Image (cartoon, rainbow, N blue to C red; front, side):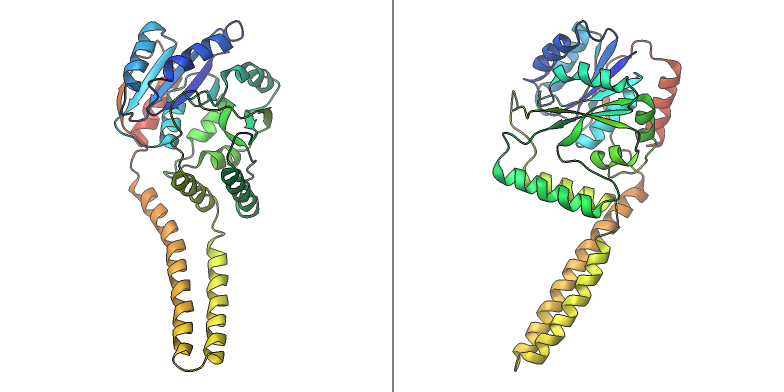
Length: 313
């Protein structure tokens, strides 16, 4: 069975060769027919040059270069659209997703699962990052319409029907963890210890993690609108009580301060939803391809699906 591996890359010029060596070693004698799709997400270093070199050296390694940095979610979507295999793996280029786990994950997938997820431990993470992650997943389990597991990220292997289900979802703001859970299907898990980056530094700063978390909370439910309404009513009541208790001019100041805070909060919540609605209404493509390696004889059905997807995206 043919295996496609999708690897989003951003400024990984020193990691691409390491990734190549690790994948070839991990799959030797385990998987005969496979391809690796390196998606260069607008890198500013020599990542594209390294991808070209690998593609010329080994035709199993293909590349797609985007015209600018569109973000990891768009790069993953691009790779999924170009994947030709009936089994598709997603992993990062920095080797924090160990390729040695792929044979185990493929064996589990072949037992009847449509998704097999590598679930990592939190060993090696800083205390604040661990606490932030655990708090977020508690909120997600309480608020989201889908179930997210702590430590289950993008590193996974999917069946073709799971990939086709993902590609059928048209939304612009894509939160992959939620989309993987939303499509359902039977899911198996493989646990592994956290692996430090082999090269470079992580691009996931605190601000990026917060933005990513907000995307997840807003994209998969409208629950924040209800607490905002309740908070508005509660603060209005507190403002009335403060106005009755506080004497003099401070009475009006307390009431106005409380009501002003509620209004700003409500506008922020509504703005998140309105902004996403506007982005969906524009129907802009998720990404623009600048350059790609030749596709060696793709099946006709996959070629037609890829062409149609990129025309309507």
